[in-house]
Length: 79
Image (cartoon, rainbow, N blue to C red; front, side, top):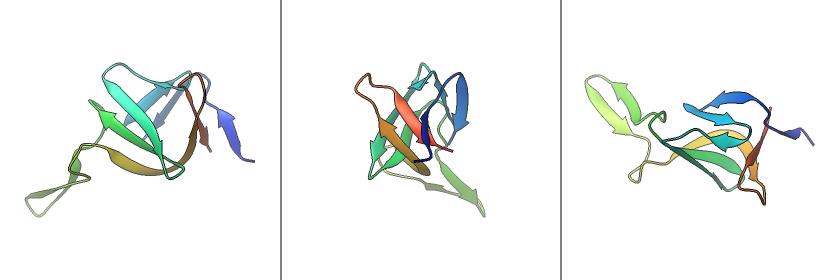
């Protein structure tokens, strides 16, 4: 099915998942089947022409990475 457990370290959307869990200072969740991230490593937005356009109002960055949250609160992502 193209989804497997993240083992080791995977860098995605500015948040590092180590053994399927976010690093300290970061959070992850699944929204509509895709990984959303928030924390010290997540991008605040897009900077263009002297203006920052935030990704979201609540700090969560929605990615295009397909993911599932497991019963152990770890994540699997599609590669």
